[in-house]
Length: 185
Image (cartoon, rainbow, N blue to C red):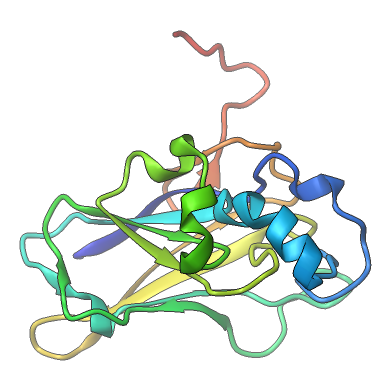
């Protein structure tokens, strides 16, 4: 396998404090004013994809998708496209691509902690949140290998992830420290 989703931050600080009423997966409405006000919060929602293989992977063959849910948290239809590679470069072995919610044009508003730790940054180019906190979510990255075969990797996380926590991969689950886990600085 060449690409692997290694971590994500699905619930950046401030996401849960938005009013519930409409467009995105978690029920948030976006207006132009809210988009500007919350640009750094949108950028704080992200997924990291690492090239764990021995060959570079062309960005133009990559796609990142996530599940869509009904009101009872059952998956519906096909997975929604979050990001598609659009540059003629490659993710080299060991490099990390971070795909952010939000727009490239507001990247200057990104918190340093959301910028650091990635070699490349991609943007969903939307003024709303993408990842689902109410139901949890499933995230899939796909790409073409050297033989032009489609490859993929997926992870999921449970409902209501803690605010501002970076979820780490364990098997196919993104999770944070449990109640009996002691963090050591």
